[in-house]
Image (cartoon, rainbow, N blue to C red):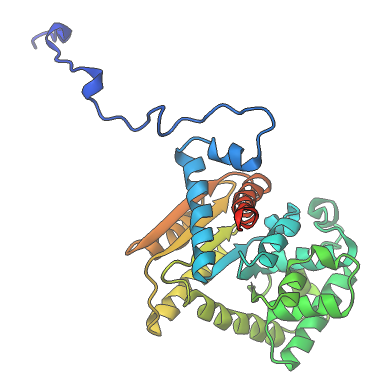
Length: 323
């Protein structure tokens, strides 16, 4: 077999670098240095026009555009978002007519309820699991199951029932509850649960028929909300890896089956790592015909305040410049 010789690089052809197309250039994409005493708006505008920063900026722009057009901006939340203490910021977005509806999984609703009641949440599971005490806080189980029973009789849904209960029973930390804020501002709040996944299903007052009926009412309400996303609405999936992306996909499918036009809307997934279902069921599949989907990867306690500050800075700036 003939011995292979090393390639002769002297015959390689090159070209002038100025003739090359580049993905990044200093004029359009690079960050700008921070001056002293800069405002948040200055800070945000000086981030690079690349990757995550560019995506975050575009999501903020699409949310502001939806608000201007009167289109829905729905924020779907997993439990960890509530445990990160973001309720005051999200509540401000509700009160500023930025977030027009909230969807939660069962864990988020439980954390929200507990925070409103005692100003704290998130028990140490490992410390109490082996003793048989995990998830058996009396006030959480009895309060939420009674609220659901009352809401069932009043023909309202899961989220509204919990929000109204918090208000009607004057929970000491009501101001930190998103569900209460939604009820007070007449903003739709839906809660989507799977039986057996939440600690309130362990309580003696748990009633599967009530829980199922209440979350099904909320699912039907969500279908109506999703049906209005077309033409500029925004769906934000924040910290739910499985349940809410699946619920969103089914609600979207029903809305289209019922004849709703659902082209040209924005979806964004915010999470600490990227997961299969949010990527497929939120970012890619729903917007594959016409729309925009974004993945913003990072900690909720950083990215959601950044997003909110960018939106509120623009809103307040516009108010200040009006004659």
